[in-house]
Image (cartoon, rainbow over all chains, first blue to last red):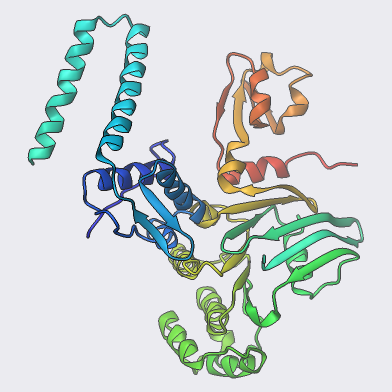
Length: 132
Length: 275
């Protein structure tokens, strides 16, 4: 298993969020299989040159979302996924993001058609990325 | 159990009082210890190590054979060779591992026949680190280990520490005035100013609890003034450090930004001396 985590220290996004998002993606895309161990919290802190508290935070957030279980003294393992539950959760996040987008759009009086165009544009490059 | 706990420590010297001071190094984490020169960092470390006796308060430290210390310069006899240093310290440490010491000297590029006084700053730091890591220290106490080091040696030290910290029984107390060393590795930070602990919390919380503020001169009134640490007024405005919660009272033209550790330490140190 090869998972890559690339963090930016100047993006303004908290580093634990970046680690969490990338591990979450790896889990949901199946790059880390059910029952498999994540990199150790301390090893990851060393590799990414971040504090242990930072990686611990990312892992406990993943555990809180029910994606992994942290076994003290052992490590962190990917939990079996309830496909329905995961779908529900991701759907809820998508809804939240769309609601936020609509709020932003209203700030600048963007029409529904223009907002749809933005979505269409966002959909196009992501399909290209998957093909490459 | 935490490897080091100082509680209510007080040390009075001519014209300077350290404390009352509490300092806890949590097991499994790196505690940064920052403050201007003369703030009391080295005295605190000496008290922790039992080299200076506190007038009041209590000190709890894991067994001395479990503590490794790195000063800015090796405290060994200058004429000793690196190998002799190893033989001299071995009897004090039941867990001394001569093989590991040889391997670490090799990593550091130090010939066993080199004398302590011939070592560069970076080599001297690595020799001390080699000693500490060869006796299975659980707590590393670093007293300004990076002052006078070039960037490469500093980065090598940080890598060694990160390796050391992959064992959850290990802890580090890292005293430095080069706060950028701590941006990467410190889990917790204690800020000391004029003998008092100003803040001791996780690094992220510390950074989040302050804002670096720049504002217009017209908006700096008598209510705001005492809330600004290290206030610098200039021809076209002012700058200073404020507690994040105080920034709600700022005028419209002021900007409040997340400070670096260095900016926090510098602005707190600029505070007028309390009478």
